[in-house]
Image 1: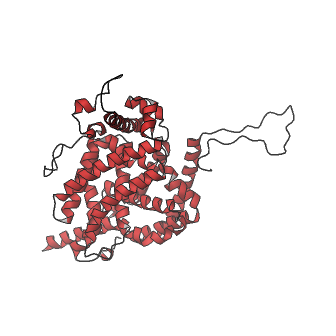
Image 2: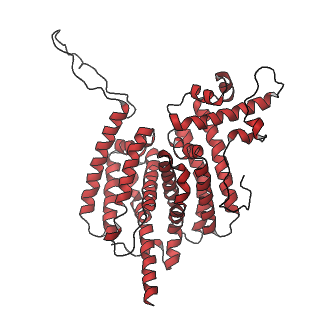
Image 3: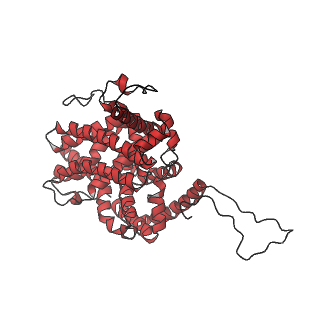
Length: 241
Length: 183
């Protein structure tokens, strides 16, 4: 696990919903024994929920959200159809829960990496580096967040936007003292990043996402800092002929 | 194409009568993805030729970009169903996304002229051009989803500044380095 203050070049954390139960991995990852096992009902329900979430995550890359069936998910999770419906009313509800778990995991870790830096450009660099490093190490999460969220319906797109808004809030910190920059600039910058991540995921190169960190960080910083480098607002930089 | 349809319906014209010795009408049945690809491909070519015509009337690169952007935005604003096809439906499934990715790569290439054509040091990397293309399409997609396709041309100035920022920054940096080298 990436501890606070650990160098950004350290080994990134693996995302595992089942391990989020806060239990030792050998317990959390094991399928529950059948029949009478004496485990508390709440523990069983929580364990099953996280296994279903994990099953959804593993199923998506091969099927895509539109073609994924509940049978695909329960088969991957090793739970019954009845257990699925005890946890979720529909495939969409399951997808949204999966997005919430993975999105929160990513946002929380990026915010933790950013908190260690004082200056805004360094915070942007730290956040982008950490996000790409985590996504490169967890291609299933990259696939969920950058590809599937855009094709799983309006509610998923809202979740996706909420996740981006957390990053947007941090990026807007760069606007302090630069009132001329438009509100929509952040949407353009983050949209470009998600689109490039989706390209890497779709072409099976998610593991190489860290290689584009420099280009992404420059793309994020230039609109805010380009004017400062030259002492002029962005719109008055030299014409390109 | 009405997006979302599966194949083309095979229907006899209402009221028509076929003689027993006539063969049934030959109608090519195509799948949804083929139908999408055909509509998308034709639409992209139509949009591209519109943009290229506008670009061809300008000489300076920033003016070309501005003219091409304006032509593209006006094209999409005038054809909301096509805007929806390009910017929303194209993200909705894997085969469609592959078509969409080819278009994004083409757009990125157009945003990144070969460095040997530049004498101002304003070249941008392949990744940067792809980021710009993705950001542009992402913003437009959001506007179309919000039902604002007709208002896309209002984004021209914002998008032009965004697309030019990396080139302008690189050119400014190169100019500074040249000044420093001259002492």
